[in-house]
Amino acid sequence: MQLYTFDEAYPVSLREGDAPTKSHFVAYFSLLLHFKPRARNLPSEVVSDLCQETLARVIRSLRSDGGICQPNRLGAIVNSVCSDVLSEHYRSVHNTPQAYP
Image 1 (cartoon, rainbow, N blue to C red):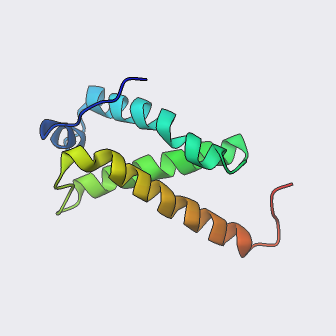
Image 2 (tube, helix red, strand yellow; image 1 turned 90 degrees about the vertical axis):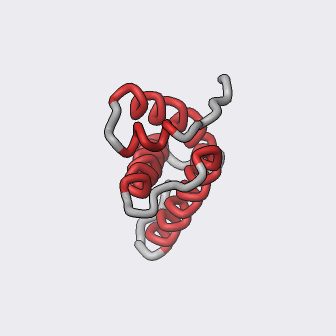
């Protein structure tokens, strides 16, 4: 996998809904995001759901008023959001009687 350098135009294109940029964003970060939850031995459907939620939150954040100020930090932001989504997932699993087999 080749690392991508995000420039000022990238988040603007994502914010505006540019289809090729969104496809690149999803493909690029989906590969990276699957490592974190998969390392915790979560079921594949949960891993997929957590990754989708992470990407959706980042895109919503881009579209908010403040957006993302430093495009070169996009990877760190995605990683941070993924950590938050994982934490929320574990809290919800911990608070329900059913756990993973």
